Image (cartoon, rainbow, N blue to C red; front, top):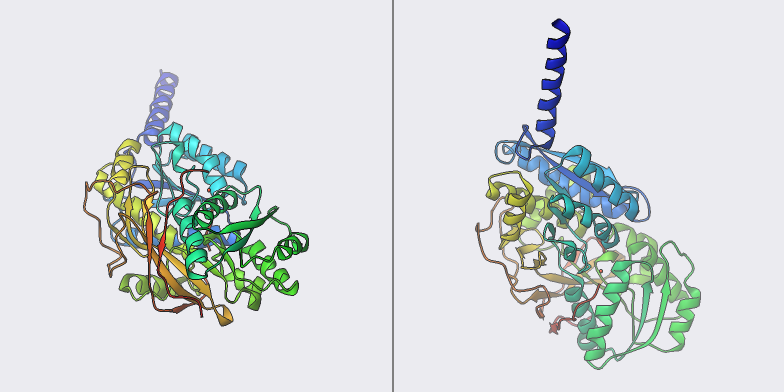
Length: 442
C-alpha cells in the first residue's frame, strides 16, 4: 500500500511539473529565449544586442514585470553559426518552453531559426535582421528594424543624388545573405537612377586580403564603391583600398556599425557613408536617456544594435502586456497590432508583413571616427522621430501600416556628430525608391 501511494505521488508530481513547463500561462515568470553571437566573427553584434535586451528587461522587472510576472532571459551563444542558432531555438521550444524568442542580428541565423519558432507557434522577434526573407518564414516571425529594400534604396539614391555618382563598384560577401541581398537592392536603385555598376567583385567572411578584388575595381575607375558587408571586413577593405590609391567614398549598410570599424579601418574610412538605425547624438530625450543609462551600466557608447535590441525587447514586453496572456497566439496577435511605439530608434509600427516601418539615418564617417548625420530617411507610413518617453506605450489595437516596400524619403539634416557605434544582416523583392535631399558631404 505504501509503495502504491509513493508511486502515485511521484506520478502526480511529475504530471504537475510537466503542466508548469508546458502550460503557456503557468509559472511566476515569463521566459524569453535570446540567441545571439557572443563569440565568433560577429561577437560585437551579439554582445551589444544582449546588453540592450538585459537593460530593457531589468527596467521592466524593476517596474513589477509584465502581467505581474518577472521576465526571465535564457541567453545562449550561437557562436556566429547558423546551424547552432537553429539548435538553440529547437532547445528553447522543446525543452525550455519559452513564451517568446529574441534574435538574431545576422539574417542567415534568423532565417535558420525562424521555421522552428514558426512550427512551435512561439513568437520570434529579430531586432536587426534586415533580409526580407526573415519574416517570410511565417506569421509568428517579426522584426523591429527596417528592411533591406528600404535600406538599399536609401544607399543607392544617396550615392546617385547626393554624391552625384555615375559609376560604381560593388564588393559583396558572396556567402552572406545580408550582403548579397543588400547589394541587390543597392544595384537596383542606383541603376534605375542612371548609375552603372561597372565592376562587381566578391569575398567570403573571414578573408583578410582584398588586394586582388580592389585592383580590379580600381581599373574600372568608379566614383564610389558599395561594400554591403560587416565591419570586420569593411575596415580592412578601406585600409587596402587607400593603399592602392582607390580614393573614392565607400558606402554600406547597418552592418558597418561597430566601435571596431574605425579601430580596424582608421583614417581610411573618413568620408565614407553607411545607413543606420539611429544616432547617439539625437536630441530626443528618450535617446539621451538610453545613451546615458547604457554608458553608466556598460561603460561604452551604445551602438545601433544595442538600441534596436533594447527597442525589440520593449516592444515584445508591451505586446505581452496588451495581449493579457503569455500564450503564443495571443502574443503574436498583439505584436501584429503594434503601432507608433516610441522606441529610441524612432516610432515603430509593425506592418502587415510583420516588418517595422521606421526612420533610417545616413551616417558620414568623420575625422577621428565621428559619426556625422548626413540625412534621414522616413519611409512612407512611418512617423518622423519625435521626443518620446521610453516608458510610453503605443495605442493598443492600432491598425497595421503600409508595407515596408513603401517609398522612403530623405530629408535634410544638419550634420551632428556621434561616437562610433554594430548591426547587420537579406532575399528579393522590388526595390523601393528613396527621394533624397540630404545635406551634401563636405
